[in-house]
Amino acid sequence: MSDSFSHAPSDWSTSVAEAIASEDGLELTDDHWQLVRALQEYYNKAERPTLRQITDALEESFHSKGGMKYLYQI
Image 1: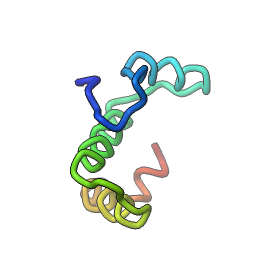
Image 2: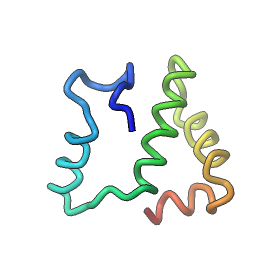
Image 3: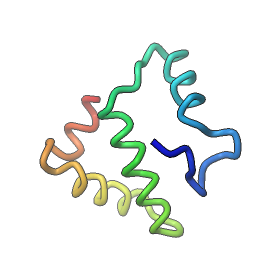
């Protein structure tokens, strides 16, 4: 996975994300990274998305897995 994401803090990387998740007792799985990539792609396309726009985009992206219900489970 690429660490490049124009809207991310300058010190963000996959290693930093994994360390933060680990501090919270969470191991990032492929499902989590798929969500991160979907959010990165959406933020790269939309300049200032609303929460509703983000929710709708995620619902569409993860529809085949159960949409937002699936995302709440991971």
